[in-house]
Length: 337
Image 1 (tube, helix red, strand yellow):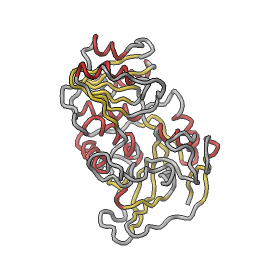
Image 2: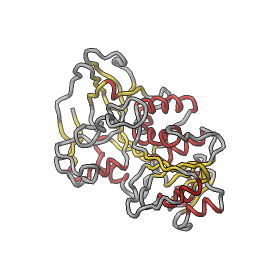
Image 3: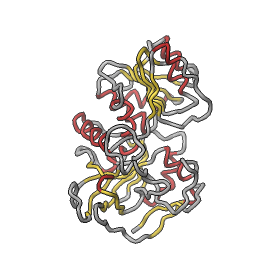
Image 4: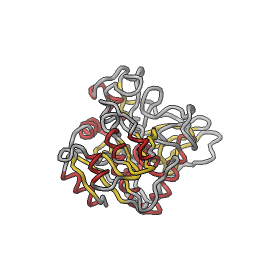
């Protein structure tokens, strides 16, 4: 079978190669999946460049955490899946449900765990989840990392959003656009930021209620608070360089769901949280249970993940290039077959 493989010590897209590998067979408790589509996340760019947690991959590694496909074989003892089932991998292979914990297991597509950018992959039964019935493979491939992250930020933890509340989203990448779709389905009012008016208009067409070009309104956090009345939830994909403004945007008892490292420079002073009783909650994707709840919500609400660009399996490097550029919107998908 064919697979895209990162060389040990990879620090560049030039270290990603299309190779032939023996097709894996499932052992006891394992599921073999013929992959139909994968999607890219910011994290995958960091892995390729050797900038992900722990640095460059120490061994040859198949990248990408997100992929969906069809079960083609199961190993002894597997009870939840059978050949023909439509499934996706989970980001963490051992986090079934409940609170974040130290036993979440390896994350696909980085050091120690081959990912989904191959024609066939084998995963443990507990690291697989049925996909939403209403989605194509390409759409389902958008969810394991970005979709579950958005779901976790909005609906898990001590302060899930409620209808009528106001949500602030940063940028128009995969997490933010999926959060926009989920928040609108939940009856929330949504504010979204971008440096591109064209992208803001695309977000408006998806239901965004208020648009902020952060190049024109540099102090956007204070603007949201004083001019717009603040928000109940911020899906904070930036990091240290933006979280100060996100905290400033909160209403009383609001929450900043801290996800990203897109802007790691700087550091917040959290004292502003005490004036509004706000909280800062760390998010690191989510569990298998969250993936199941997300799939159910997508089927009930008829949500279709937005695919901004699609590439063939052979053009995977071009997909990475597009995903790292300023033109990409929402999710970039690679069609494997």
